[in-house]
Amino acid sequence: MSSSNLLTGFTRLCKGLAVVLVGAHIVVQILPSAVSFLALIPAKTIPFAWNLITAGYLEQTIYGVFVSVFGLLFTGKLLEPIWGSREFLKFIFIVNFLTSVCVFITAISLYYISREESYLYLPISGFQGVLSALLVGIKQIMADQELSSLKIKAKWLPSLTVLISIVISFFTVDSAAFLPPLVFGTYIGWIYLRYWQRKPEAKLRGDPSDEFAFSTFFPQFLRPVIDPVATIFDRLLCGRRSEASNEERDYTLGSTALPGSDPIEASRRRERGARALEERLAAEMLASSGGSAEELRRVGSDNV
Image 1 (cartoon, rainbow, N blue to C red):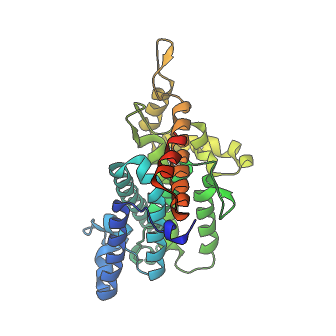
Image 2 (cartoon, rainbow, N blue to C red):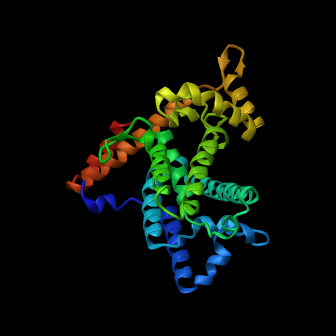
Image 3 (cartoon, rainbow, N blue to C red):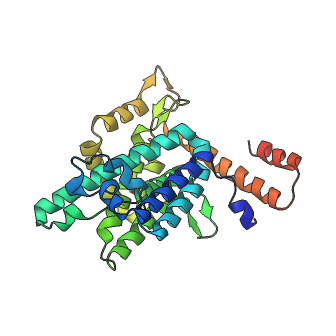
């Protein structure tokens, strides 16, 4: 596959969001004082509550801009055609906002525990929380798809990202600025996809399949330990939503289960996601080798 085809096929929405990320970075380079109003600074969040939204779209370094734009374009290229533009944008907005809320609460709690004022005045910003949540979406739709360049399955991308970030945090002085959003983004992304995302075709919210349980973020030998702990956190953090999801999954009408009320529908969604990815890659390969329009259409029909 040629490099030119790797850099095509990005959605209009993702391009627009990439412009927002680049534009926000340019603004703080021209007006450094804008960081005080756009980044999440816990001591100033009240009354500057808008930074719970703006902080996630503000990258303060050129390296952060590059990683965020690159990650957004390529994950969006896979997820948006499957979810739809509206759901994709909704996912980004909710994850970004709730990640900022969790970071704010954590910073305030750490201040009251340690009395370290640095927790109150550290400017926290960046798209890393949303990016980590998008990797959870990749894990959901193409869990067993192997990434040839990395030689790993897609289901391990969120876990490896968090693990590598934790390791890096031991060698950097500003880990508090990037690690909490990344960890919270991963968890909130999973919560949204597990319990909240609407599936109109299946008359179900979320993905109740065992293959998408929280313990699947961990190696097999740790799962008997993780499952009981995850169940406790589900009840504490999700409450009725978790119980309602279980009721929807178990509910039957007579002797026939409601459409989408079991893990089979979730497996079908992952199969559709993997098939959509295969079609896109095959089309790009044919395009790079000069394939005709008729061949491109045939690839799509053969994978249906």
